Length: 139
Image (cartoon, rainbow, N blue to C red; front, side, top):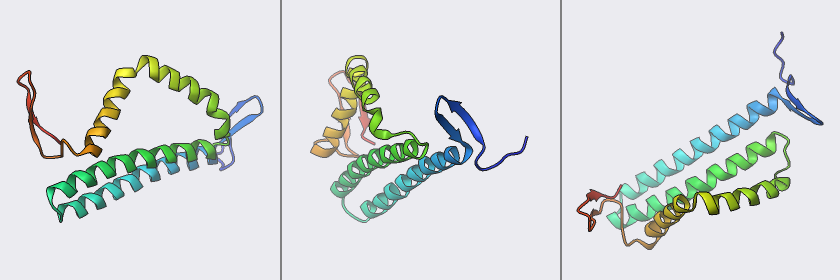
């Protein structure tokens, strides 16, 4: 079997997935992760020159930008596969309901972590002690 750039990998109804589409989608996701890592490294380098408050702010900004870049990369990758992203609204709404019901505590913890980072009541590097006796350092 000869491997060609426009080789059909998967055919479902009228949709055809080609090798070129698959390679482009994987490259887009890899680039999104690389851009996110470079951006966070740059923010870390900037925050190392500043005080501890700037480090906490840069960390929070880096986390938020990471999530935005990865989400955009996945959306662009899905779009490069020839799938209309706008038509995925029904699936996204069903997924939103599933997350709201099934993964409520996990999403709650995620959002609470972002709020703590943005509120700056707990900063990276702080030493904390809980009422249960658990101690630790915020990373």
